[in-house]
Length: 198
Image 1 (cartoon, one colour):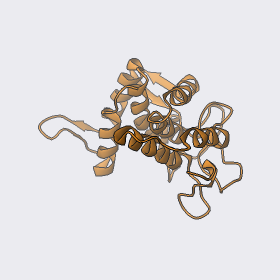
Image 2 (tube, rainbow, N blue to C red; image 1 turned 180 degrees about the vertical axis):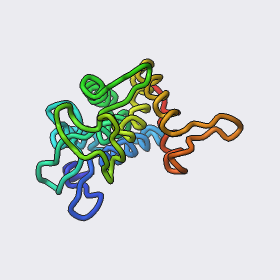
Image 3 (cartoon, rainbow, N blue to C red; image 1 turned 120 degrees about the horizontal axis):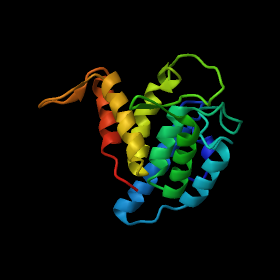
């Protein structure tokens, strides 16, 4: 990880901060498992913060290498907070708290997370982040379950899990599963729902 964080391309000419956070988390996890130090990790984390942290405390979504990125997005923020927790729990907590402060919504015991910053207008469907219903991002809400577990947000976790079970059409029994999300949705929610506290 010698180059700046905003030069790591997911596709040619496109940098996705959520994917860069996954690389950082994987490097940190490898260091933990093998006992070998992760070289340059703190420098890369500093570069990530400078390149992708939005003034709101959320994480920017996508852009071209080395140029300013588009506005902050909820699903990107939730994923980044989750993966960065493996490398820098304090930075992860900072992101999670900023997202919680102006992204969390709840009604009648159900909870969700905004996909877009309050006061901004965006489409209700997005190729990267999925549907947005009543300002809540379906993917953002699901991914934020992991952050709630990592950072001890029991109330947020319970409220969002209720929503995930309702929207995902949870079925109990010997093969309990989320009916709507398919295998990928089940795998992502399994990972989120079994994330360990930091």
